[in-house]
Image (cartoon, rainbow, N blue to C red; front, side, top):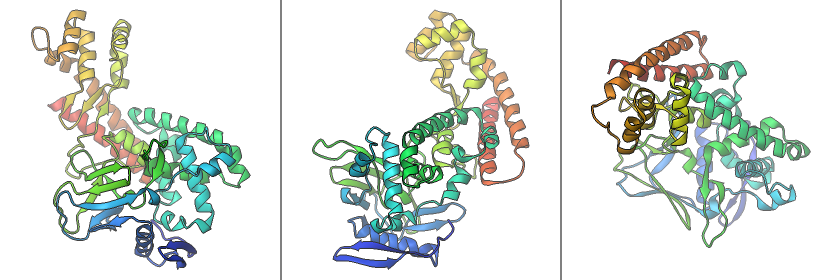
Length: 401
């Protein structure tokens, strides 16, 4: 991220308060200041530190050998940033969504320099980072180049954002906050928040946790253990680490479609090995090939839509296998498969593949057309091209398998 302009920010110390220059000389300075800021609020940091990753921004790296199960981070409740209930009540925003409440609270705190939150904010992505990587910020033309499976979660996200901005627009304007201001903090919360359930029956809320937000996402089986209890959040090593290894957390077992929409990246192995969490949605090629009577039957049993190819295993998901059998077989046969996970008499997997392969070949051609039409390189164009390429790679593997 580019350096910010020099400024001075007050931060609280354990024994009073002092004024500390906000770091600007190098990327490292602001992270050193923020580390001290977090520790002064009770965050315990053991054997890890933020570090630049070539071509990937920032991440959390080990600074020494760490044993499996060792606690690397502890974030107490007092260090979390929570919605400002007093402010929200004053502005009559109690009924706004949890994400909108936290975004408005963070925006207000960051605009009020005396809160000291600027030390933390200095380590966050710049607005330009979001504008380049988040599809919700792209032009209509660039969003139109996204694969159909990405369009669906993006439409839901845009609808959620639209509702939140409508609910807060008047309040923001009253405080001279622009829509771009609100959108930036809305995306910060969207990509960096946790759900906190405090002790003694107090209501839960979305919160932000300092230092954990340095951790990049890793797919299932590659991440450390992030736990929560009545005191706060803790991060423990999932295995033995050597010094200089990146420590990852999971943002959820998400496909690359959802990662792109909500976080502005996709997981792409340089060796072409797909993420175990990824799937290639097939609704736009399969649903048009199902008869209406079949769609009604599948709807009745909750099996209409959300069809997928699973790249890691190179198999169709169970819902897809049921749907194709519903098109090809009698009701007794496909319902038996749906209930038991196996065919009633002879194995029908060959017939299923014979039905699907022509659709996959059409999907391959669609991928090739979009990849060739993307044009000049840009952060957004590169993300779109990468996702189309991943889909084409998975489709080709299924056809050839």
